[in-house]
Length: 320
Length: 252
Image (cartoon, rainbow over all chains, first blue to last red; front, top):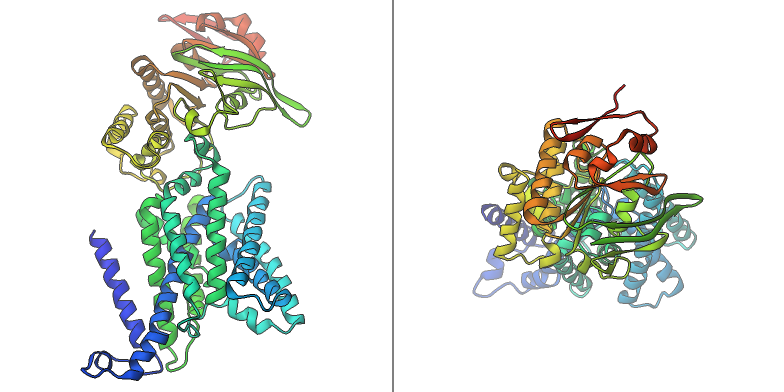
C-alpha cells in the first residue's frame, strides 16, 4: 500500500512537470488566474494534455506488452523490439503507405497489426525449431529476425523515398502529438485491461505447455491471445508516436525482481512504471536542449541500453 | 481408473511406446520402472494427455483423454513432468494456489486457501511459503511443485521422476509424504522411478517396461526377483529381504 502511494505520487509529480515545461510558457498562474490566459489554456488542451496522455498510454501498453511477450516466449529478454514485432509493424505500415496510400489511419494500423502478428508468430516458430535454447540465444534470434525484416523495409523505403517517414515510426517522438492525432492510443488502455483480465492465464502459460495443459487450459489459445494483444499494441504505438526501444524489457524485469512473476500482481506495477519511465525520458528529452527537443524514444534507448546490459549481466548469469 | 488401450508413440521410424495395454489399479502407489529409453515417461505423458499418442486411446475414469475437455480432466488427473527447469519468480504459495485453478478459474474461496495451506504443510514447506521459487534449492522447489499437484486435489496424480535431483534424505522424505498422501487422502499415484529399491519399498504395484512394452507387472515381491530384473535390465541383480522389504543390490 505504501509502495502504491509512493508510485502514484511520483507519477503525478512527473505528469505535472510534463504539463508545465516546453517552448511555450504555461504556468499555474496563467491557468488559474481569475481571467485565465486563453493562449496558455489552448496550449494545454491542444498540445500538453494530449502529449501527456500519449506518453503514459504508450509507456503503459508497451510495458505490459513486453511482460506478455516474456511469458509466451518464456524468456526474460524478449520484447517487441527484440522479437521482430516492431520491425514487422513498420514493414506493414510501409506496405500500406505504398500500396494503399489513401487508407485511413485505422486501416493502416490494422495492416501493421497483421504484419506484426505474422512476424512475431514467425519468431515463435523459429524458437520452437532451436533445440537447445540458452536464455541469451532467444533475443539474439529475435534481433537477427528483426534486422532482416528491417532491411527489407529500408530497401523499399529507400527506393520510394520514404526513409524519413519510416524513421518517424521507429523513433518514439512525442513532440508531434496534438489533439486529434493520438486518440487511437486509448485503445491500448483497453488492451492493457484485457491483459490484466487474463493475467492468471499468462502466468500459467509462462510456466510452460505441460504445466498449462495440466491445469486444464488451452496453451495455444493463450499464446494466440498474447500475440494479438502484443501485435495490436505495437502497431498502434508505431502508427501514432513511434517505437520506444527496450521499454518492454526493462520495466517488466525490474518489476519482476521486486514483485515476482505473478502477472495478477505485477501487471499494475508494470503499467505504472512503464508510464513513469517514458514520462521521465520525455521530460529529459525536452529539458536537456531547451527550447529544442531530443525525442523521448532516443532518451529511452540510451537509458534503456545501459539498464539492459546491467540486466543481461545480472539476470543472464542466473537464467543462462 | 486409468486404462491404456493399445497405446503407441512413434517418432519417425522408431517406436518409443509399442502397443501398450494397461489397467492401473485404483488407490495406492503404482511405480513404472525400466531402463532408459523404455518409454516410461512417454507413456506417462500420453496417459495424462500432455503428449499426443500416435495410436490407441487412454481412458481416465472412463473419459477418453484426447476428446474430453481439458478443464474436466484437470479435476481428475494431475501430472508433473520434469521440465520445470524454468524458475519463474512465484512464491511457493502462489505456485501451489495455481493448483486450485481448475476448480476456481482464478477466483479462490476461503476453502481453496485452506486447500493451499494444507498442501504446503503436507510437503513441509510452511516456513518457506512466501519464498520465491528461484531463491530455493532444487529439492525444495521439487516439493513445491508436488504440493501444487496435490493441491489440485485430483483422484489421480502422475509424477515423472519425483526423486530427480533430491538427496537421500529428501528422497526418503518425498516418498514418505507420497505414501502418506496415498494412505490418508485416498489418491492414486503413478510414479516413474529410477531407483528400484524406492519402488520396491513404497509401491503397491510395479509396472516394468522394456523396449516400449510392458514387460512385467505385479506386486513388489513379484517383480523384485533376480530372474525378472535380469530380463528387464540385462544385469545380474541379487535381491534380499531386509526388514520385510525386497532390496536389490546391483552395485557390483
